[in-house]
Image (cartoon, rainbow over the protein chains, first blue to last red):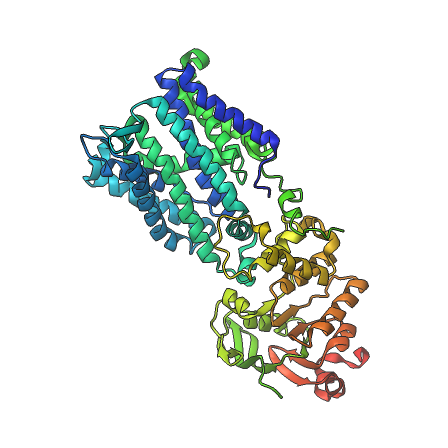
Length: 338
Length: 250
């Protein structure tokens, strides 16, 4: 399981990043919003891949953290003035990670199908918490009237009111997350969670308290998902309980599997492709009456990819060559090679 | 004799109505190879599972250096210095052999909650892993994916992973099953070398190997200890002869 991508993967990643970065130069508002959504879901899908593809935990409630982050930003933002990103971002990450630790402490005790069910259950609990209470507008959702800014004293460095700025900020965040997760997966901690994914029982017998490692992985994943939720809430400034719903969680899973799980950059490709195809499928000029039933096209697309590309869209590009020896690890033995 | 490293007192394990292990009281010492023999279903592997913490006993107590470890979870028992290998190969099939051993070696870092520097920069872990894979005679397979090496080599990998955790007590569950004669001789020699500084508990069916390494033999039948003694005593024992060994085996 190579973590460091080989050059075809890096080239693709660079192409995707440059393409997204250029959207504000050539596209109008709608295109910028779509591109920003792609980036948001790429971050979300990567956070999910840490659990799914590297820790072996299939979370079906990951949107809970995505949505919670969006709500935290909305609640934390003052109504008539812009919140400072330098304060809001740590608060959002902190709150989400804290809730992630509480939920994680319980759900990580289970595994397999039970893990899927309890993560779903907790996400639904949080969904109904925001849906049925009067916090942030209940089922109607709520608005962030003034978008966050990054300000030092009186000087505004970054203003999310400008869509291009938000996109570039999100893109930087996405690349940073990608780099940090690669670092994490190469670290001793990363080695442990990947071992847990393959054979948790053996890891325990080797002396690892696997519960602690899974919990930390879960919390990190929640924190990364909160970055996605943070940016998402800034796109339209509108949040609703649906952000925490199982449908969002399912879309996240679909993106990871579509792109190739356990590859880290696959989920980026998956998110971009998923949203890209969805946009095309809604284009009446392109697909005619099917535009009203774009879900049919999405379904066919996902089925085709899963059937034809076993490792997802990006799986064949050298993200995770499972069948081959690991070039990183082969350096490990040092000099003495047979 | 000195205090036992590992001791069981009246240990039992039942699964529903089946008494897999019944009232076993044994002492294990450093500098000695204890071999547990017995027919299939005698409870040998269950006994190892109790010692390693993989299964909690239904009754009785287990102590390591006088400390009660009866209900301790397996990862803590491993950290105390009690390591085991598995009868059914229990490895990380999709990783290279070296990465398998690496994970075992890394478990002796004070904590693996290290998030920044790459794992392979840890020279201490690398040295431990290399030594272990070398002792088990598997260096030539270091970069081969574990799932693709032969069954015998996977058995060697089991041993390498156990050694990489640098245990004081080695619980070996049929390590030789599936190994060729050359590897068997290698592992037998290894056990004899390790026993001076380790406490070794071995389950084995290969009687040549058993008599080549055993300082003490324990015969289990139907979950109970039939007899314990030196190889010669066991060879002469009428009870064992009748119950298990049979004349042709000696």
